[in-house]
Image 1: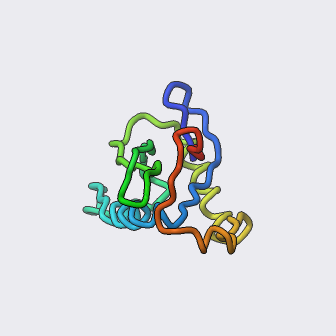
Image 2: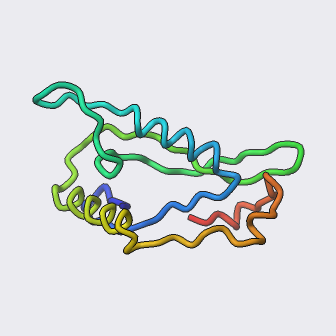
Length: 125
């Protein structure tokens, strides 16, 4: 869910990561599993939809070229309206039930080189 920090208004979103974002995706999934909060019965791991993250882009490069990638940073909980968390939970449940689907990588995307050259005008978000 995208949450407007000023109004708390939410918008549904799917962050589809391609091959060049695999490292970021794995790191983010690990970070999500490591988050712990103190609850009334001790420490607990919140659900994926119950943690706030800030996504930005960073420029990366290697010998094959340069591209934009995600940068993910956890945000400490703030006053987010309860409705935003309930909407995120509902969105997650719909996705888990298969009611919301992402398209898989196309044959062309699967055959792309590991790092492709991307201009700053091609940022997908």
